[in-house]
Structures are given as C-alpha cells and as structure tokens.
Image (cartoon, rainbow, N blue to C red; front, side, top):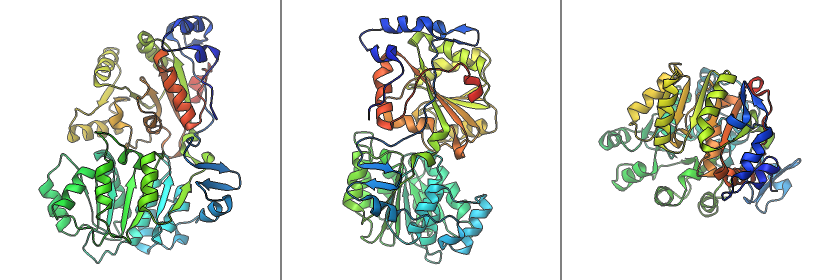
Length: 457
C-alpha cells in the first residue's frame, strides 16, 4: 500500500520546482502570532506505526503470517505468558525483576521470555521502548549457570552507548543471580577487557570490532557459549564500509552449533533475513502487533517549509508549546553548532551530543540532561539508538535523516515506556521524496497541521 503525503500541494512539489511550495503556503493556518507563510508550519497526526513493506509478513486479526507460514502456525507460535511467575524463572531472577520495579511483562516480554528460557532461537521485530532489552536479558539470565566461571552469553550491539545501557540492565536484573557481566567496546583499554574476560565473565556485551578482536587473540573463548543475542540487528548487519556485517558473520562462525540465537530489530533488512535463514535453527518469529507497539503513542507530524525558514519556525514552535525536555536531530555537526549558537543567543538551555565528543564527554552530556540542567538536546544520529530518557516528550527532525531506518530510532527517543510523545519533521522541497519513502516503508501517514498542537504535547 502506498500512502500519499499530505495534500495535493505536497504531491506536486518536486526537487526541480519550488513554485508549488510558495503557492501552497499562501493559505496556511496561523501558529501562535506568526503567519504560517513565514513560519511554514503544517502538522497532522499519524494514527500508528505499522509494518514495513516487502518483508514477507503481514498482520491479520487472527494471527501473524511470516514468510510461507500459515496463520495457524504463526498463531500457535505466539503463546503468551502473562506473568513473570509463570515463566519458570529462578527465584533470584524474580527478585531482580521486582527490585527493578517491573510488575507485569510487556507484550514482547510475554511472547519472548519463556521461549528464550527454553533455549529456542528467537527473532523478534520490536521497536524502541517495548521492553525488548529486559526480554532477552531475563531469558539469557535463566540459561546461565552462575557456578561456571566461563563466558556463556554474548550480546552484540552497534554502539558503545547501547552496550553501557545493557550492562546496567543486566547487572540490576542479575544481581541476585550472581551473574558477572562486562562490556567490551572500542575506545577503551583492550588489556582491561582481557583481564575481565579471564576473571570469569558470564556475559560479555560488546561492539563487533572489539569482540572479534578478543576472540582472535584467544582471550574470549566461545566453546561454552549458550546464548548469542544481536540487538539492533538491522544496524549490526548493515553492509558498507561503516557496517559490521562481515565482523558479525565472523563472530557467528566461532560459536558452537548448539548455541541459542536471539535477533532483535525494529526493522528487518536483507542482511538480517539472510542471517535468520543461514544461521538460526527453526526460530520462533515474533512481531508485536501494531496496536501494541510503542510507536502508536508517538504522534508524527510534518512542517513544510523552505530551508531558510527552519530557524524561525523552530523558535515559533518553542514559543507556542510547553515541553519538559526535547531532542532536535540534525544531519551534520556544522548544523548542530549553528543551532547551538542561535539557541544559546536566545537564552535556551541547550546541550549537544555528537560523534566528536569522547565517551566521557557524551556520558556527562546525558547525565546533565537527565538532571534537567538543559531542556533541549541537539544531536546527530549518534544519539538515535540506545538513549533512554523518559522525560523527553518531543523529538524534532530539523533535518530529515538520510537513512529511512534512522527515522524510527530518532522518533523512538520520545514516548518511552509507553508514554505519549510527539515527533515533528521539518520538510523542505528537497525532502518530499524522502518523506514519501518513510511513509511507504513504515506505512504511516504524516499530514497537515492542526492548530491545537500545544494541546497534544
């Protein structure tokens, strides 16, 4: 299904012609006291996040079809366990769950934890904020023998920040299970990683380059590995010079044949599906239905404007609405620095997060932001994955992401833990095609602006 973008004016806009945009803006509504022809703001709600096209599954009222499986087969696979107590978890793990503050499992946890504890391979499409980290963590903890001081679980992640987040989660949930977890990432001491692995780490969380290096050095032994998890698998298995696909494949080839695999991703690329077909053993395939996905809590809007109107529109938005904390995404550090200067000059308390900051600086930025020392965080896509800040209710894509898969991760920074969130996309005439691709790929509709935006945030 192809979803149309906006009204006829939007449909007619092309890269070669901007006349339609000038004409279309003449009767746009007013936001605050600023005429929309100058601010060029059009926003409308998208109903919910739906399924990617062309990826061999479809949702039906009676169940889920994945590939060639029938609805009945898929339905039988999706057995729900509605309480943690019924999942067969060790009492020490249950102690960790309730100490962490969990009361009832989320939909992805109801579907995934019990099969993971049983050693079944699992591949799951799950958006940010659905509870997938706890899902594979709890299943993995049940599979580990705390008395055996060998590496029994390996979690691969694409970013250092995600590794840090998973480490905190595993240490908290596994505290009473006496599980020793470490993280091994680039930019840190390799010798220290070697020491920690040799000391008997049960769980290693790491980025592909560092993990592969430790395996090749003979430091990280995989013969006792029981569980291999790939989180954000679409990013891990991305092709190209800056992708990790070959490193991940090399790691997979070193693990025992009977090692259980769990693959979690918000989207499923060709690379992910190839790994599923080649390396996984009759995996349980889970898709959280659209009405249960956290993205339905995020209202997705667009703002149609020329590039030179972006800053003025941004200022008008912040004059009109009131939010506790927000994140603005841009595509370059140069644009980030420009916004930082302009917003600081206007007395905004802003912080910045980008690839040129080292890990200590990044951690300090996030720590200060969580403490409320700044209310606006300007970031590049380095922040799009693995940052969990529940007070963020608004994400603004000042620039539309180059990669459409980044879109879902950006807007997922709002609406955490099923809270309501809003995502606003600034769309220039150059971005019309990209916006259409996002709508088609995720099957969402992003339309015109209602006047009552402030009431929706």
